[in-house]
View 1 (cartoon, rainbow, N blue to C red):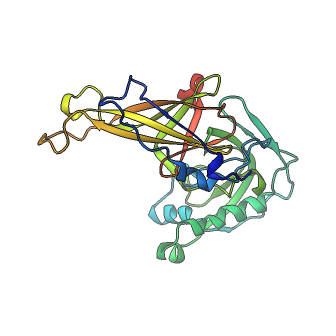
View 2: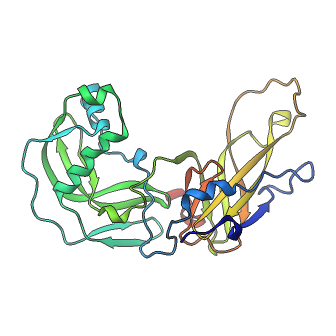
View 3: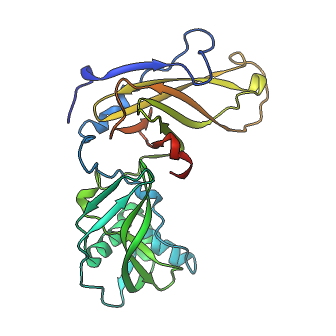
Amino acid sequence: MKVGFGAIVLLMTAACCGPAPHGTAYPSPPTEALAAWQSFPANQVPRPIVMFWNSFESAGGFAGDNEKIAGMCGKFVLAAPLPLQVPSEAVATWPDGTTARYSAISASNAFSAMTNAATRMPGPECVSVQALPITAARFGAAQVKTDRGSATVSAWLFTATGVVGEMAAPALPHSAYWDSGTDKRSWDQGASVSDESRVLTFTFAGAPENSGPCGADYTGAVAESPSAVAIAVLAIPHSAPNAPIACTAIAAMRSVTVVLTAPLGGRVVVNASGDVVTVCPDVIRSSC
């Protein structure tokens, strides 16, 4: 569903640890970060999988550097026939118990998807490296990273020369994913949502809270649309601007809490730069 920014609801909130210091210090609601998600069908069942392609671990290790480069480039060649039978169903399950069911793809289609990953790592190494021989394949399961936590999905597991363990390619159809997955992921930020899905706690790496003049307080602002939620954070240093203070660069996990005008539902959560963050229910955050 596409919406104009005139329909976007804006809400600013104080940091989780108390009122904002210095009176009225707040970041601007990050409305621009919502633009890329205007057409995301947040209410679709099953919800499209927002998968982090650049974090999918496709092997348990490699015999050497050349094999590692080949694996990262998606350079494989068939050295044995692939199974012809296609399972009737593929499943994706999340830590909160959410399960989605799809028609499984064939081993051949999964192999094609795995080799097409070469376009995600362009460079001369991918052109010259020798392809890894695929010697066997079986239907199983693998863990993938998504914006709703780690999901267990049906997958084709490939055995390859020079690879420790098995290479995994999801057995889900292309239609299961949103925009074929995304590389715009925030690696050092995340969020959790309350039981009523209205309170978001946004976590990030920042200055320690109790470090005197080297510490900082944080406030947050949120912009909402029917398809996404964007959160911006403003740091308020304890020291005065341009104060000659030497501080050790030690980051701590900090957070701000924002209250949404409507339950989060299937909406995507992004930071102010538009990078997707993982959001999980509060009760299972540690296992998500």
